[in-house]
Length: 279
Image 1 (spheres, rainbow, N blue to C red):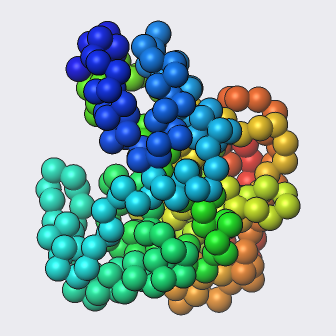
Image 2 (image 1 turned 180 degrees about the vertical axis):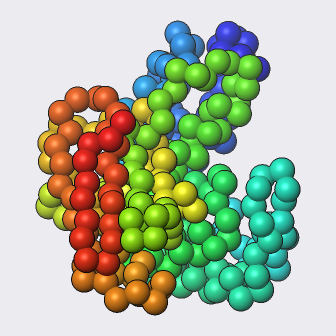
């Protein structure tokens, strides 16, 4: 379906389709006020503005209830049995067990299920994300989860309008890449938090096998001008590799001035680090 075809459907059908993309009645009804849409760009811009500026914690929580849980050990085994097409390798029995347990602990602590944009993530990456986010407080975790929900919403909108050209859609406004210069390899499995200078967490992720996080923010999510921080958990990275490091964390402060792309790399070794604005 393309946008022109979608714009011609009955409004009740459009409502059902949009609600399937994000299970919030407030978000759906507010977005329907702009139906039919002039372009996919308008659709995404309105969807983003409503989600971040018109919806509240109750609306975000409501959307979470329409997600299936990560699952118990049995369902997780099926999900992560290995898929050559997705490039996700089979998960170990230990990882599956720990993932099921962490999912249960998460829901008990926060009162809603673990929300994450899981596209392309292995079971081990999911486990690392889940265990790290369990340490957050409720307010920070709600901020992170609503951002992850919006990533999922954008993916679902793209699947709804599969024949549209989505090449205009920007990637995350903020990206990062960690290189361990002591071994000349990417710094993988490093937890990174994006925060306001007040300390409030906006987003959280873990570097992949290439040392990158390319989807810290949802597409088209533009940060307001101001000062921000990226906090890299370098202490656990080095200890997990049996290296005695000097820095338990590396904190990089930077300023967002416009809606352009910001790449904030980190070059790290056990006793030094450097950064720069990348491209």
